[in-house]
Image (cartoon, rainbow, N blue to C red; front, side):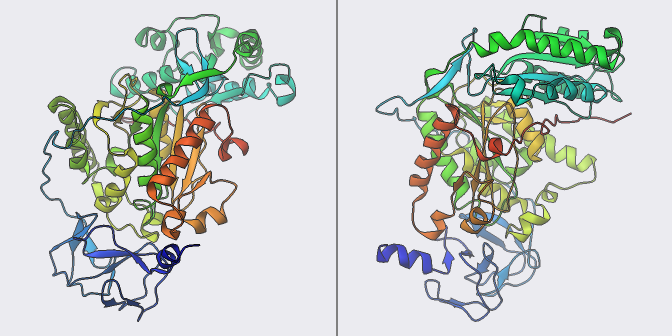
Length: 512
């Protein structure tokens, strides 16, 4: 190990920008610890990943991290003090959107990266090869699960190219208006899964009397029954047993076609990644998120697509995205979604700062402003080419934003419905999220988490803080794993069998 590496590992804090008022503890720091690089001594004990002040900040003044405002001091802060919820709070402030000033050409790679993908008849490319059993309403969820459960590994052994039969169930579909935004979003989400390239075929099961009527769903989303899209209605099929039998027969009829596919070399331009961060901590914006951003820059350079979402978790950092918007129209769509969320939370007696969870705060994140500044790093540095509504088909190539809540299962469901054929999920506290039919790659922000939950974590980005790799090197490692996973290599969550229960469409409107 080089002396430079040893020096970095022993460094007690990380400075992210020369203009910052705080630095980040690289390990737990006891009160009295001297930070020689900053010329300050810790007044308080500082947990790993938390902030320590390196200059005096007067009450009411902004505090900066990443050279951006993360909150305002609620009392005078002295150098060496712990900066967290007891002395730092969220406040709104004007942000300069400066549309398009950071738009830059994306350099083309010398050679085109490829992966072993599955080409569908319509030209779309899959990373997995499942058959889905999708419920229109919670009332048909059990029947959908019974159908899928029939197809055990033993029964599927004669179809080695089929990855499995997946139940896609949810808790909605009735007790809601049969017209309007709520059911439109649900239908769009279900249709996105029915059309997803990672499903070779789909059996869709309804009860019969629900608000989300099968014929209305098919008409609204211009879906048509075929050999690989079979609708069943429990009440007209004769009840539970007969519907399960019909569902099993429908899947059996699809299996030979699904098994006939073969993987073949495909350009990386066919990869679309949904970007997620959950259980974030103080290291998320230093290690895993920027490393994932570096991988996203590589994928976009190869013609691929990355989808950043979780609108409440870009709040306060959206001006960094409008600066990369390719047009005023794209920036306006993003700003409109920010304004919608401000109104939405106000109408529901909430605050945009409600988002950081107790786990986020325990990990060192104090305000939504701080969390958002780290979250946007997942998307890298390329131009923002489009903004999509929740679960809308993503057709643009490059960096796209999709409006979703910050709740990971709801957000990722929208991304997959929009066409994401792979998920990359950064976590500092430890998430075990699976996402069938899309594989989910887990990126640990710190080495302690990676070592503690090694069976759930695919990559350790804590090595960046440890000083053994750079952000760019880790980004290259992530990019190479993306290509392997897209080619069929199982992620940790897939090896553990996760992903059958994480379909959570965004529920809008009253439940009646």
